Image 1 (tube, each protein chain N blue to C red):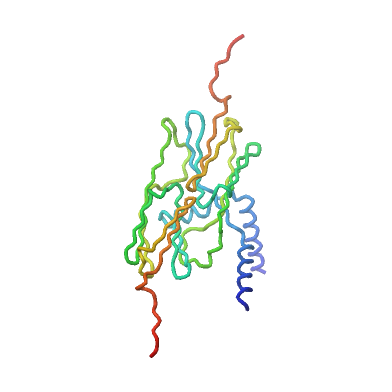
Image 2 (cartoon, rainbow over the protein chains, first blue to last red):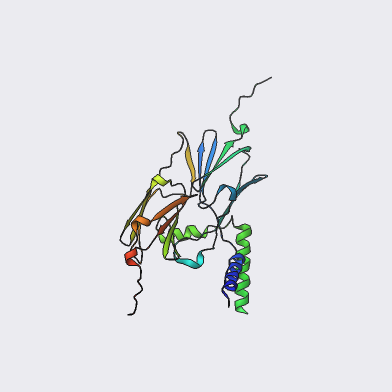
Length: 126
Length: 141
């Protein structure tokens, strides 16, 4: 078998392999006006991150580059490399229009605000 | 027959994982817990060198220290996580802010030539083999 054939086969095999999906670890911190969500997504760059809000479902997906390519050269493995996905359901108490996202050093930070309705309001009597 | 059935089952599991992946507990978490070591590390071969890789989200360059001596590489790190005053953690899955791990390689490391890179929370350290430790071709006279 020629070398190029072997390389082609290897490529095919890695393409056929379904990339594993991991659920990123999540911390939630509540503050006066809202919440900060922290998710560990090492290996994901900005352009490979997608955040979608559909009705009350907030879906986060991150792709890791070069996923699985170098597995054949592995000498010792303690962790597996894969893509990330997690969906969170937002309660009506959260403002669905004010969601900010920031990715830095492999951590995604989502900032959510509490919905104005849930804050205590003085009702004037007519 | 049994093999076919197992295979089909695997396929269904795979599909379930890719469609419903968000609902399944992360496999990796279990592994990390069972190994009881943080951070988890992978070692790959790249030509003559070995590459050590580790996922270290939230760590900055200045939070990490690498030391090489002989055939041992030591990685230590410490990071702090600050929250605004008056805020409270209501859900916690992430952890480990401090660690100290050492790895022994099957060869002497050329300390001067070690290169480390930190990108998107992933550390990659290239560990070249020391010149004195490389095999030498002996000419037959």
